[in-house]
Length: 256
Ligand SMILES: [Zn+2]
Ligand SMILES: [Zn+2]
Image (cartoon, rainbow, N blue to C red; front, top):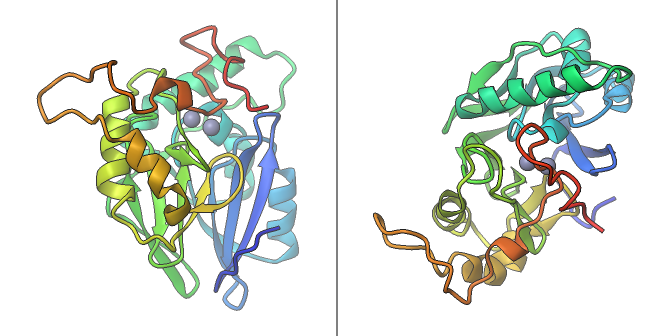
């Protein structure tokens, strides 16, 4: 599945036609794990958790877009553990799942359970392993990355292999996205493995040149973003998860 090796177990379940990564991390000796994102049916994830007799400590959402939080009800029913999103994406989460409930008469799981908040700097644990939540707003106001020092960062739709998340949804901001990338991701080591919310693994080193160019027109504090820069901007943003509640662009960014 991956050319990378981790000191813990990591399994990816690619869900929905948008190919969102639902990520199961666990310590096989201590039988404890966490789940990051659940964008589609969680049957396989739940089955795997049962097979392994895992205790799932927590389900974390990188952000509130439907392709990362769909089927929350299914997970909540089976896993009696906290499910959280950053406080600034609570309304995104509720709006997107409520929209699905309104329009979809035949969908499985149209529930919109309340979930809790997580915050910048909060630690997460599974067995002998731990990491920290980094708030990386831009793609959405509450987008977060999940950082296990010297090993892995799960970035949701903030960055992908040779791409960044779009900034068209409510509360999104291209300037904020660039600041997050510059101040919170580009400061990390080249060898750090990146697992995005869609698509394959990459590393900070492999993305450094592209991302450095992407943020090169970042304005000084207080000034407006200009469109005259030669740095890549909107045209290079990618992520298939436009906000279905706010635009008709939902299919525009489907990955080929
Ligand atoms: Zn997405
Ligand atoms: Zn998204």
